[in-house]
Image (cartoon, rainbow, N blue to C red; front, side, top):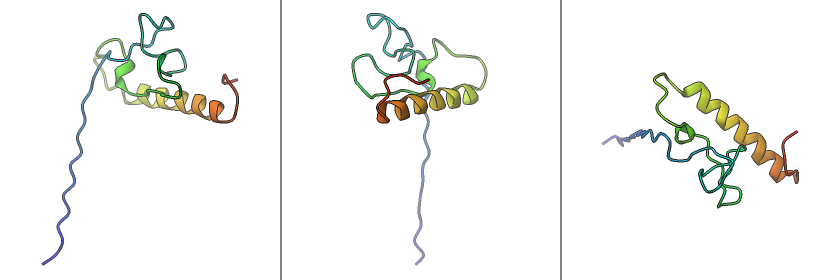
Length: 83
């Protein structure tokens, strides 16, 4: 009997759960998309949006991911900031 592989892809969109604000008392992430309370925890998904955009956010989320990747690379390379 042939082996059957079943794959389930699930997605859940959670808007405005990780606010992008410089003030740690008001937001979860800083301008580099790093969590205020957890060093080297970067978030690059739809949760950084303040609300639903009303349009497909794929390109913006990809830009967030690219931005976060630059900051991760900089931190792993021993630099504190990108630039």
